[in-house]
Amino acid sequence: MDEAQFEEIAERYRDNLFAIAFQYTKNAADADDMVQIALLKCYQAKKPFENEQHIRHWLIRVTVNECKRYLVSPWRRYTAPIGDYAETLGFENPEQSALFFAVMELPRVPVHLYYYEDYSVREIAETLGLRESAVQTRLLRARQKLRQKLEGWNDD
Image: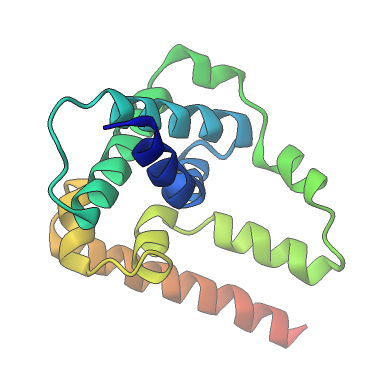
């Protein structure tokens, strides 16, 4: 892969990979690191990618694996809580802040891949190493959990 191809791939997928990594790490700096590692591995990959879908799937899989590796590392003990990051976002009203925290409590990677990346349940299961029924259950529970949170706001 030459530099021009790599720059195009990095530009195209960087934000999506960051969203996935942030959902795992809950820390912008660590998410950036995970994306950089995944992109570096892409640049150094010896075998050619078959097509655009193969690149996308491969990058997501590598990002997820790097995040999982990070989560079990001793460095994880030294991260700031999600509340510290939320304070830097500057929400305009309390509802936006509450929605942010409600969404952050969801099983975000399956939700992100399904709703934002347009992956099928089967593709998510393959990417995350889960059974399809487990992915469907996580998506169902995420929708139920968010629905309960939103209904709670309407009651106030």
